[in-house]
Length: 334
Image (cartoon, rainbow, N blue to C red; front, side, top):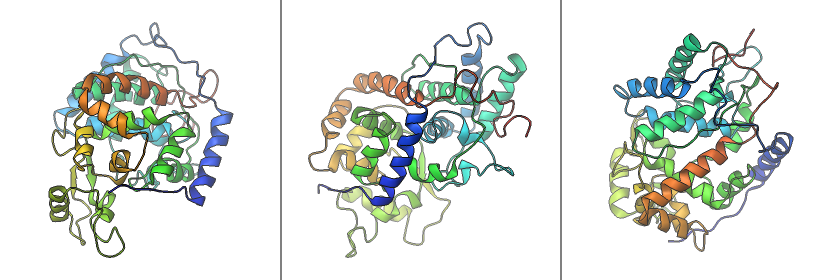
């Protein structure tokens, strides 16, 4: 069944605020591929080595690190703000609804930072570490490798309120979802491409159970869920579900970065409401892109390398703005 949707007033207000932020810090960034060529030439290999070691005991870590980069860039730009802990002057984005008891991988980021500091002290920003970790995570999971643009500096602040409104939730309407991307300079192709990151990773029941029970307000589930997938998810997550239960975002190849996410949507096997809406929304411009990526994994990979760079260029701090944190969890001299 096709969907239709409208843009809510609270979202319009939130997006207007994000637009003002975007205007203050435009996408035209001073980032380069060789930023650390002289000051920390081995930074990419250091990042990849730590993540490869983490994969030996945590198969979820690659998806988690990619998600951290996404959640960082969608809140006041790619500035490492998602990594900051609470302090007397900071309300951590980790406690925002999209991240609370959900965002993970912070310990691995700490290990990466420590390894880099031992080789190149006070040189590599935490924001750049997230960008490099996203690249390594995708590559180590079978996906493409791309040239990461670097030179970001770290923020001195976090924005928990903006994290609550700007990061897309699993329950966004199609209109809200596209608006949240557009306001940050990302288009429909970026939306469909970056959503393909849901080809690996896990999710808690709370992220999709509204689709399983009384979605239609008359007792019925989301009609765009395939019968077998609905039955499987209801068995895993009953109405009184265990909040610690998680399931694969991709039921076919859960730990691989591939194009199965798109073929899942074609079969009505998208886990999140926002996933399935890319294919099931009547007349949506996203549908032919889903079809294209489902038919051609190389086309998806090529598009992903463009879109992830586009996202990484969202309002970075460069030059003398911000700082290079010595500890990704707190600002210097705090």
